[in-house]
Amino acid sequence: MRKSARRDQRWMNSDRVSVKPNPTRKTRLGLYCLSGEFSGNEVEIPKEGIVIGRKPEQANLVLSSHQVSAAHVRVWPDATGQGLMVEDLNSTNGTFSLESAWSGSPSGWVELRSPKLLRPGAHFRLGESVAEFEVMEQQPAGGSPARR
Image (cartoon, rainbow, N blue to C red; front, side, top):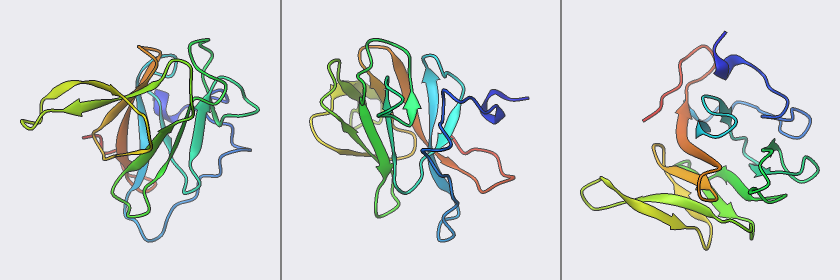
């Protein structure tokens, strides 16, 4: 069984996140965890979005690191369908996006000071190195994920 097919209650609390396909989109947006305790896992982002944090009472996606705030970051689909909005929730250790130079090559991590649109293929991380995520498009049920 693939890691992404495994359902881990720490990864997604199904009582708090209802995942429903959007019939107007051929693909859905999600996150792929590149590093951290959920490395190799993916999650679809529902239209109401999710909160990533340390406290189950305040977050849908719960990470155990003490470098993660109780409610660290909020992620939700952009209204235009172009990507995901990512907003740091005044976390102690910050949320960072990987900025690209004009050539398309990575130029460095920049701390998020306000909500930011991240398109498929973009990366963000919590703190200095707690967990790194990639915005991805997910194919409809039965299809394989489309990471860029």
